[in-house]
Image 1: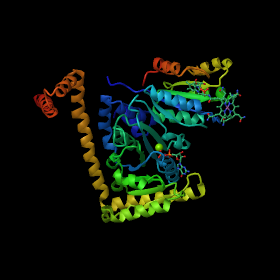
Image 2 (image 1 turned 60 degrees about the horizontal axis):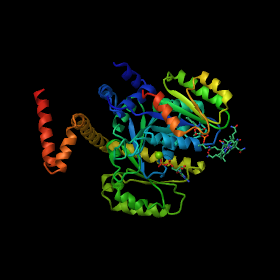
Image 3 (image 1 turned 90 degrees about the vertical axis):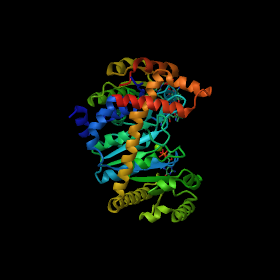
Image 4 (image 1 turned 45 degrees about the vertical axis):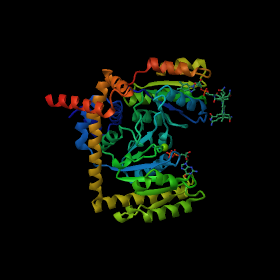
Length: 133
Length: 324
Ligand code: B12
Ligand SMILES: Nc1nc2c(ncn2[C@@H]2O[C@H](COP(=O)(O)OP(=O)(O)O)[C@@H](O)[C@H]2O)c(=O)[nH]1
Ligand SMILES: [Mg+2]
């Protein structure tokens, strides 16, 4: 069986210009051997979900430091479901208070990483939990 | 008909992107699907865009999409970025510039990593084009990597090739060296509001007057495109560029050059397919059995030479095929 390559997307939903973390993650994922689609900032959940399907990624990583994750993250999961693409894993990170974790997990977000999370632990999580389609 | 094939022909993005993925990952069943799709391909107009990284290829692609959508054309975009030779990973960033079209169902943007291919595209590009053609896209835009010195694979795939240059980057010399003069159907001097644009235009034009391409019946125009962040002029410049592309398309059809290019493309496709069907399985089988390593060892110690080894392998594999 030929080796399948993991494809991921890093996206920044909403009006949030904090892209340093997202860029660092994109580079780190490349160095882990993944193919990384980067969408840039100011994306609507609709744009993110459509791009994820067009790019056939295994995982969407949402980065949000503005505080709007409670609205935006679940919406992306919901849109993917509508597109019959709920096999795409969605994880998130950024400035996310602990009391919001359960709301996000319940909505279908599979993992959350906050400031200080080591890049290795994020890559490790993906390698353990994501199988290429 | 195979249900996947049916879905792709009906324009289903998910099935199409998945099949592109299978082609990239060299899943054998994917080839079977391409065989079935093939009769549905060959009807799209294919535009190639090449030029150095940062020249503005993705930004131009985005603007062309906007223009073509106004004429109700459906669009496929293949955007190629380089795979890191060290990690095998890739950052596919062309999409950033095109995201405003992400939720337009008439536009399908798919990023590809080179995965070691050197000609500016990915090995999967040819089949990815076929898949987008089968989806019924009117126009397919292929953006090359823009790093290679010999970035000429694109001519085997595109009907019109745009070469994008920027003033003040020493591009005119690079263009000559990289053999881009010969492949351009249209030159774009991008960011033409910058100093040196007129100079670059003059140099290009005089080089073109000396080249043989102009005797073909088509003089590659040099199109100036100004600042992408000044919508008043940029929209006008893109309309002009789009007109030149259309003129080239008309020229190709009327002069019979289109069939010539399709023939060239068919030739390239056979060679690619031979590579996939003949050479790759041989190398794979030799690698799996550890034979390739042993041959390398022999050659290293001068117990054999590469030609004799290759001849021995060829004989063995061809004989097996004939016995079958
Ligand atoms: C640098 C910074 C800026 C820079 C951003 C530069 C840039 N291009 O990124 C500038 C100066 C521009 C800026 C501006 C603002 N900022 Co600011 N900024 C910061 C600061 C100090 C650091 C952020 C950072 O880059 N961290 C480094 C990166 C690597 O870490 P990270 O993004 O958190 O990512 C890590 C994890 O969170 C996780 N992760 C993050 N995303 C993802 C995604 C996935 C998929 C995964 C798996 C993991 C993951 O992994 C990473 C590695 O551990 C934070 C404070 C802080 N300590 O976080 C405030 C902070 C984010 N900013 C804040 C604010 C309010 C603003 C402004 C609104 C200020 C203002 N009033 O003008 C503006 C808004 C800008 C905008 N357009 O959105 C607040 C946000 C408050 C909130 N959410 O409730 C913070 C928290 C400061 C604070 N304590 O008040 N900011
Ligand atoms: N000033 C200016 N910048 C531009 C123009 N077109 C593109 N750029 C910028 O040039 C950089 C590279 O553009 P991109 O389209 O990604 O180039 P590519 O690598 O050739 O695809 C980006 O930062 C763009 O914003 C332009 O007309 N004027
Ligand atoms: Mg680009």
